Amino acid sequence: MKIFGSSILLLFVLTTFSFVRGQERVITTGVPFLLITPDARAAGMGELGVATSPDSYAQQWNPAKYAFSESNSGLGLSYTPYLRQLVDDIFLGSLTYYNKLNDRSAWASSLKYFSYGNVQFNNMMSGTIIDQGSKRPNEITLDLSYSLKLSEKFSMAVAGRFLRSDLKIHTDIDATSANSLGVDIAGFYQGSPFGLGNNDARFRGGFNISNIGPRLKYDEGGQMDFIPTNLKIGSGMDLIFDSSNILGIHLEFSKLLVPTPVAFYDNNNQQLGYRQPDVNFFNGIFKSFNDAPGGFDEELKEITWALGLEYLFANTLALRSGYFNESEEKGSRRYLTFGAGFKLKSMEIDISYLSSTSKIRNPLENTLRFSLSFNFDGANRSAGGQELSLVY
Image (cartoon, rainbow, N blue to C red; front, side, top):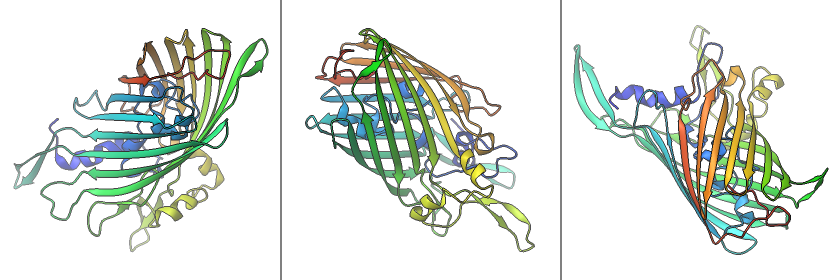
């Protein structure tokens, strides 16, 4: 991809959090790629996963799920092309590995890498374009988590994350790579199967407060950007019709724990626009619940929700669908998702597709996403007993 360097630094934010007239208070953050769904299973269910059954990609959604994994260890690989209709070298890649220490605890590690592709930097001098060379801006995270069952049905987890954002222009002397740290705190509940009419069912619930950490700073004296601290709360129900037919229904709510942008003015008291308030990340988390100028009604508009379905047949084939909804005033991300999964012994292949229902184009619209996972030394799952997990 060849593009003016100054443009690429804005491209990702503007396309991830669409900005249109009437959306001046859309909440934006640094390293927004942390909010991109890396795995095709979750992507096919409306991009949710905080209360779905455990899988290799629980690190992204709720690391507390690893304590309930039926496999002793697992590996996940995924690739997500981004802005595919405009360029061909922007992508998100992820690698996740987890290992159960015993029946009550597990640890996991993951790496996520977002590449902005090859960017050509140019300067305009006296009407002449001067080649300043090319660069591949990128962002990366390294995670480590530990999960523990506090009871037979409930677990909690903590995760630590190192963030590095290298978006600097190599000719800018003052610019540096921005680094930060993040912490996740998560909980997961998985009940035992119970009777529901003529069938069995199982309930799940979960929460995750992710990316709790200090703001990013790219240059001396420049504005500091919040990282995307995020709260997710969700629930799910597996309807077990028989040993070969299971339907999962999931609902999830999400809210950025980042302050709402505030208006700023010039010396003549003329409003110039909106920007992030200058508060530390800890105060910003609490401030995010009651700082919207529109009051409680606007606070509710900052909550997104997603509904997802997953049908599992004979533990070998999965069909998925979902819907994601965000207020028109807060980004207007609205889309349907579809997906499928196939299992061959210990290997699982998932694909997903997104179709936008909003007037605002989605950077992942009409894009196929793929993920691959391997489960090692897994227990056999059955519909009638405690081994049922709906892992896919």
